[in-house]
Structures are given as structure tokens and as C-alpha cells.
Amino acid sequence: MSSPSSQLSDLTALILDRAMAELSNTSARIAGLEKQITDLRERLGALPGYDVESGQNPALSSGHFDHWQKQAQAQVKQLNVQLAQALADHEERLAETRQAFGRNSAINAIQAKMAQEQRNMVQRRVEHQ
Image (cartoon, one colour):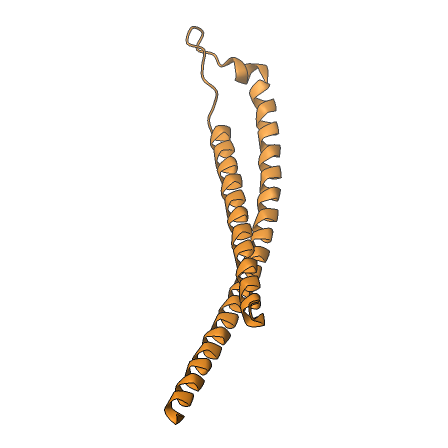
């Protein structure tokens, strides 16, 4: 059976791993949302192509492009809301990760100190014999 400090160390390491995985997931989600927003904004900025034969732009003259622009702008707003939520979630995960890292570092330092004290005690016993 392992010592309580060793069990605590294992537990804090698992908590840190979970926190790091969640932080990575939120980072990936943020990157994906930012890419979607950027792509959609680029598409919004580009005008549809012109008809080669007539020189007219059927999408602009029929109003389809205006309708699409309104839908795309609404989608950008929705993505921005999701991005804000993801950024807030990321900040929470970052705080949790820092806390888990601190706990893990503290228990590792305590274990190292206990191991050093144990070695010192064994060395003193050998010296006194």
C-alpha cells in the first residue's frame, strides 16, 4: 500500500492532467470560433462574381446577396457570443489549471522534503553506529 503523501501526489497529478486537457479543449474551441468568424467576415467582404455575358451581377440585382449578408451578419453575431462564452470558460479553466499546478508543485515539494529528511535520518543512524 502506498503512503498517503504518494496517494495525494497521484491525485493532484490527475487533477492537473484533467485541468490541462480542459484548458486545451477550450483553446481549440476558441481557435475554431475565431477561424469561423474570420472566414465569414472575409466572405462578407467579397462581392459575388459577375456574369461574364451580361456584365451584370444577378445576386446583387435580385436581392439574394442582401438577404445572405443579413443572415451572415446574424451568424457572426451568434459566433461572437459563443466566442465570448468560450473566452470566459477559458479564463475559468486557466485559473483551475494554475491552482492545480500549485497544488501539484506543493505536494511534490513536500514529498521531496520528506524524502530528504528520511535520507538524513538514515545517514545519522549510520554515522552513530
